[in-house]
Length: 268
Image (cartoon, rainbow, N blue to C red):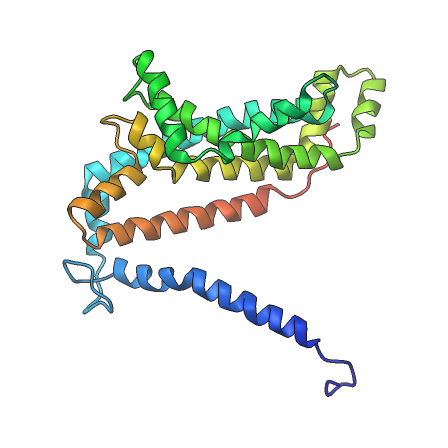
């Protein structure tokens, strides 16, 4: 019994909390090292840092190669997000509400990019885009990333549609709205949290993707590819500074998702 007379937590729940705490600590340990390294005054990776400096953040900002790679990754990720969200949402509607033969097969095929190893998919994509002479075109990377991102959109949006009450949509149609207008003005606002979450997953899956960009990018250097080359050729704390900036970007996106992904009411 607790001091206030209420029963304490069961032993299994305490053990569960302790285990979750250990897992969280294990996952966060790299950040405990990366963050100090990004502020190191040493010209090479050294932990603990001998001193503190912003020189590596300044080096990142002043290096046009790093900035160009970052901007290119953002452009590719945003384009991938738009394409994957539109196509994935349409596919989710077709899988949840469609009544046609072979729907189970379509559902399985739509999730295959999550199953196929990335290196196998990248080789196949390279063979395809090489035939149409798109290797080195950033749009090829967008298409390659979109195929990987669409399953996330299908899963998240499909789950929202399965729990959505179609009565709202039918009510709008009974008041004179067409099917597409009812979906646009009623259904999509109702499942906005799922749409925002799907967009976040699509953006992150593209922004952090390396293998497809290596096969399809040619001389187009994305940020993950630039980081990979930096690790191979010249390791310095700039890579730690870039990693910290990536963590900050993802954290900001999570804040945006939690802020704008809140439940919405249908638009009248």
